[in-house]
Image 1: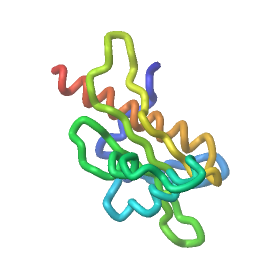
Image 2 (image 1 turned 120 degrees about the vertical axis):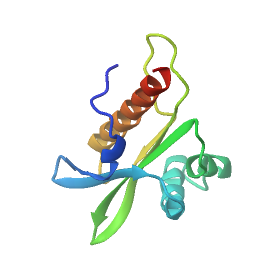
Image 3 (image 1 turned 135 degrees about the vertical axis):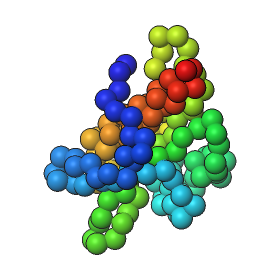
Length: 131
């Protein structure tokens, strides 16, 4: 699967989704922990696994974690998060996200944007490491 872009240094630019929702992609930060816990708890219907939370939050040179934020009621709100391993993919395989969570208020287009950003960045890093 060919992904549309490598966000690289452009992570902080605004992306306009259907419904005129503007989101910004960036690397996860420590301050995102509560919002990430909320997204994870919605997925599991209860308390998220502590290991999974730490896996998203901890720096790991073999994993990329990107989140999406938007303004909701005038407050910057984390509405999506995804992670992807940066191991070189097998020949003829594209990297795929390990985790991809989006706020249901934003929808499928945010999931597609995050998937493209994660996969595109992972492919670019793999190309750079191979060079």
